[in-house]
Length: 593
Image (cartoon, rainbow, N blue to C red; front, side, top):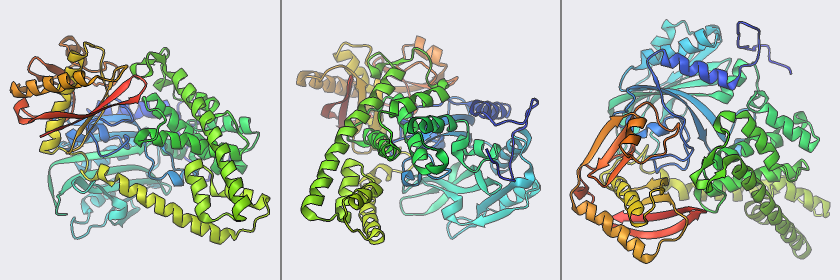
C-alpha cells in the first residue's frame, strides 16, 4: 500500500504500525479522564429528548438539556465516544472521506473551562499522545461579522503554542449553530493535519433568539469533535479512509464476492461498504425497514447498496458483508445479546435476517422496474429524464443503469442533456424532502418550551399508566418524540389496545394530573435507582450518576428531559392515536390542553 510523502505513522514502543480503532478510543478517553473529565455512555442512534433530529448526528446530542443549563449528574467536564449517523451528505458518499455512519470522539465543558484550556487540551492530545509534530498542524478561526467579533482570543492561544499557520474564515466555515432557528451557537476553531481537518473545537458563547438577535449565553459551553475514521487515516498516512482497519476488511469482502478490484471500482465499493455498515447499526438500535422516517432511511440505505452491488455483479451479498461489519465492531455486539424489541431474538441473527429479507424484497422490486422500463421503450421509443427519475426514485435505478439499458436497446440519448435534466428532477425532489423535514428542526437544539415540558412530564405518567392498566410490568419505553404540539411514545406490547383500555389509560393519567403530584428530581447511581424501583434499561446506557424523577408514588423514572414542578401544570391529557410501529412495539400519540 502506497503512502503519501507526508505520512504520519503512530509510534509505539514496539514498532511503526497502523493505529487501531480501539487503541485510539482508549487513549482519547484515558487522556481526558486524566484531566478530570467523566466518560458518558455511547448511546443509541435514536436520540432521546430531542425531537429536532431523526438520528444522533453528533456526540453533543445526548447532552442537549445540559448544554441549555440543566445540571449534569457527572459534573461539568465530560468526554465520550459516540456512534453517529448523518444522511445530509449521502450523495457525497463514494469519495475518500464521507460516511453515513461514523464514530465521534468528544469532550465538553458545561460552563467550566473556556477557550484557552480547550485549545490547550486539543493541542496536548495531538502532539503529546498521538505524537503529531506541531509543524504539521494548521488551524482556522472565526473572522467575525456584524453579530459576533473576530476570534482573536483563539488566534492568540494558538500562537502561544507555536502554531504559525492560522487562517480566518467566515460563518460558513468557522461557526456552529444554532441547530434550528434559535438556541446556543458560537465560533469554532478547526484543526488540520497536513491540510486534512481532524478536530473541531466549538465555543458556544452566544444564543440566537427568535428575532435573529445574538446575545451572550448565560452558560458558555465547549463542544469538541474528532471523527475516528478520518483520524485513523491521518495517523496512518492515508488519503483514503476506506483503507483503514475499520473499512479495509469490508472492502476486501466485497472484492472477494464480486471478483473485482477496489482500485478499479472505488466509488461503488465505498457506497456498498458505507451503506451496509450504517444499516447494521440502525438495525442494532431496533430500527426496521419501513416507509416512514428512520425506517425509510434504513430501507433506502440497504436498497442503494444493492443497486450498486448489481453494478458489480453482486447478488445475495448484503448479509455476508454485514457479518464483516459485526466482526469489526465486536464491542457493539456482545455474545448472547438479546433485546426486548427483537422479541427475545438474538440481535446478530435479527440484523442478518432483516438485511437478507430486504435484499430479497428489493430484488423483486427491481424486476418490476425492468418491466416498466421495457414497456417505456416499446411504447415511447425513448426514455425521458422524467422517466429516468421515476425509475430512480421508485425502483432504485441509478441514471447510469437506465442509460446503459437504453444504449443496449439502440435508443439515441444526448447523455449530457439527459443528465442535466435528470439532475433538475433530482434537485426538485431533494428540495421537497428538505421542506418536508424543516419542521423537525424549527425548534432549535431541542425545544424546552413550557408546552414541551408539560408533554414530556405527561409521557412519564402515560408509561406508568400503561403498565398499570395493561397489568404488564415488562412494558418499557422504546422511543419518544415530543414537539410543542404533541407527544409520541413507543412502548413494548404485543397487541393493539382496546378502546376501553385507551380510555382507562387516559383517565388514569388525568387523575394523576388532578392529584397535583409534586415532581422531584434526585441524583444517584444507576444501582441505587434500580433498587428504588426507577424505570430504565439497566445496561451500559448510564454513567456513574443519573437523574431520577419521582412523581408522587405513581412514577419513578431515569430521565434527562425537562419537567414541570407539579402535575397540575400539565392540563388535560388526551390520547389521539394508538397504532403499531413494528412487531411487539405500539405507539401512542397524545396532546395536552
